Length: 336
Image (tube, rainbow, N blue to C red):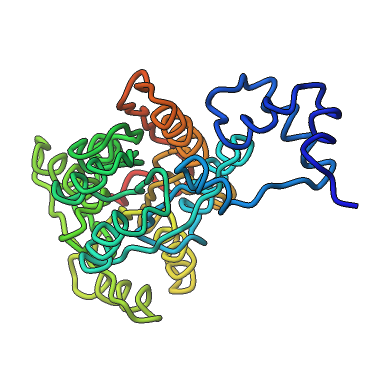
């Protein structure tokens, strides 16, 4: 026999109205009580239909998560873990939307006010158009950004300073004596204003500001499956080969690291290499990189989202998380 709301109330030691409120208006229930109710409901395998809840309260208890890359990447999968650990106990789930170009972004923001099937939106690593955020504001749907390119149109945000973080990597290589440096990036989609573009800008600015002239070369990965091999051929082609390679993200740096060794090059004796993320295997590979914690950022963004849904203003509204350089064995002074 299926458990009833009375069974959940009895097991949790609260009133029936409290159980109902925990499912329909969790922001009105203390975290301690909410945890007891959800634990009891879980033990009894009790649930209420989302459709009934939506009709009664006008809430869907669903958050939209907009990603500019695959959910399986290290950054996004960590982000999702951080979001889920906060939203799930609060009675919310989330739907993932892949937004890879301006058309997909426009479609999402044009149809959401009609569907009204989410209570809030979390965006990761790209900026918004003013008209898009205005559409959501008109129907009371808050937007929280993670690693946004700007605060425009956002009710709250959290992220690292990509520009400053990339400067740390550039300064490190320059201080070691590198003057011929190649920066490897993914193919940018300028219309989405990816936050990764700020890394390139910060790196370039640091090289331009150097007291000694820096020969900086930008290499863009193709969309082909053999993009790393093609990039490496381009990097090593010619007499003035770089003494250091800086990568937009660890995913690029790790693949280059293995290819360089396959080509018979020693990292860092022949060429230094840096990444950005400090992802799962960066430490084992000895990769010098910029550390960021997407799991913690995801949880923080989820807490800000719940605060906004409860009618509160997060304090602070916009958080900048300090990024720091993690120096490992993949960087050294260039050969004399």
